[in-house]
Length: 301
Length: 324
View 1 (cartoon, chains in turn red, cyan):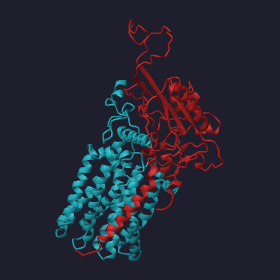
View 2 (cartoon, one colour; view 1 turned 90 degrees about the vertical axis):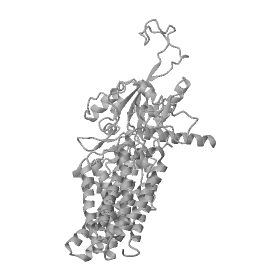
View 3 (tube, one colour; view 1 turned 30 degrees about the vertical axis):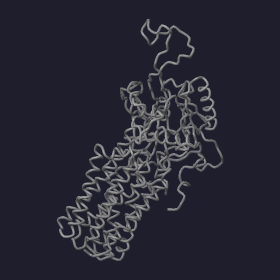
View 4 (tube, chains in turn red, orange; view 1 turned 60 degrees about the vertical axis):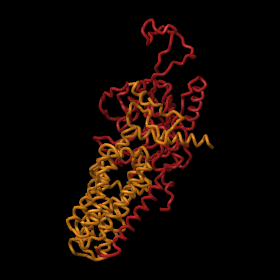
C-alpha cells in the first residue's frame, strides 16, 4: 500500500483537522493539581450538567476515592494519593495553634507531618493525535470546531473499538446503553460561549479553561513559580507537543510521576504505527495467497 | 492504602542507574488499578470471529485452487466451510455491538485509519461472492457465476484472514500492539492451518493433498511467527505464557504441530488420521486466537504492562540524549 496514511490520521492542527481551516483557536483545560483540594465539585458538576447516569456507590476500600477511574459514566475523576514524604524543613511555618497530627507532647519543634496529599482531577485529554477518533469506524467520534474530540451518540453503534484504542483509559462503553461515552469538554456550553461545567464549579481554579496557547503560557509560568519556590517535583504532563500523542488539549501540572496518579508515563497513539501495520498485513496476505497456491503444485497425492 | 502505594516501589523502580537487560519489573501505580480500559469485546464473539474469519478467508483460497485444479470435494468443503464460517463471523460481529441495529453505520464512511472500517468493507466485498460460491456449488446451478464468485472470494479471502492482525494490534493494549509486525503472519498461518484441517476432514485423501500442504506450511508459519513475536515483545509477552491465555497458547502449539504432522503426513494414507489431524488443526487455530485475545485483555488489566515499557522507553531516550 503506497498511500500516505498519515494524511488520514488526526493532523497536527486541531481544529483544522476537523475541517475548520480558518485558523480558529483550540480550547482545552489546564488542570493545576497543586491547588486541587479534592472537593470533587468537578465530578458533581460534570455529572449534573451532562446528565451522566450514576454508576454505583462503590466502596473501593483504598482511599478517599470511591470513584475509581474514568469511564463511560465518569468524565471527571479526582484521584487521592496519601503519601509519606519527609517534611520540608526549610519552609517557614506559622503556628496557628491547630490540633497537630502527632500526640500531644510529641514533636516539640512544631514539626510538619510526614505525609502529603496528591489530589488531581483527571479528564479526557482531547489528544492532538486521538486514537479513539482515528479508529472509530462509523465517524461517530469527530473533531469539533474547538479542537476537542466528541462522540455523536446518534451515530455510535457501540463497536467498542475506541475503548482499547485510548492510551489513557478514558472512553468506555456504557453497559445498559451499549454506546461509547466520554467528556465532551461541554460541547454544548462551549457553543453558547460558556465555561465547561467542571471548570466553572472548581473553587480553587485548579481546573482552568481557555484557549490552549494561553493555558500553555499560564502553565509554563506556574511551573517556573513552583520551581522557584522550592517545589522541584512539579512537572507538566501532556504539555509537550512532541510527545507520543502530539500533546494534549487537556493537560496537567503534577507533583509526582504520572503513573502515581494513574496516568501512563509516555503514551503513544497506536495509529502512529498503522502504516507499518497495513504493510505487514499486506505482505502476510500475499504470503497466504502464494503459500496456498504453491500447495496446489506438485504431485496430486 | 498509602503504604501499599509506596510498596510497589520497594526495589527502587524508576530510578536511573544500574539496569539489567530485562526492564525493572518494579513500578508505581495508582493503587494497582489499570491505566487502560480493557476491551469490552466478548471473547466468544470477537476471538471467535478472529478464528472463523481466518478459517473462511483461507478456505476460500483453497476452494478456488481446488476449483481450478478439478478437485470437486475439496472445492465444496472450502466453499461451504467459508460460508458457514463467515456467517458465524457476521453474527458474532453484529451480536457484539452495543447497538446491533445500527450495524450498517459501519458502512457510513470509508476510513483507512480505522482497521474496523477497512475490515467492514473487506467483509462486504468478500461475503457476497463467498455466499454465491457456496450456494451455486450446493445447488449445482449457475456454475459459471459460481466459478467467478469462487475465484473472487479466493482473491479477497487472504485480506479477511490478515487484516484481523491489524484490527487488534491497532490499540493501546500492550500485548496486541507490540505484536503488530508478526500478528498478521501468525493469523494467516493459523488460518491456513484451520482451512487445511477442514479440507482434510471434508475431502477424500486423493483430493486433499493441497489441504495437507497448506496445513504444514501454515503450522510452520504460525509457530515461527509466534516465537518471533514473543521474543520481540519482551515483558509484554508474559500474559501469553501465564494463566488462561498461557494454557490456550500451549494447547494451540501442541494441537497445531500434532495436527499438522498427523493430518499432513499420516493423512496421506489414512482418512482417519486426516480427520483427527484436521480436527486438531481447527482446535489449535481456535486456541491461538482465544489465547492471543485473552492475553491482550490481561495485559490491559495490569498497569505493569503499560507503565514498565513506557518507563523503559523514557529511560532509553534519556540515555540516548546523554550520549548525543
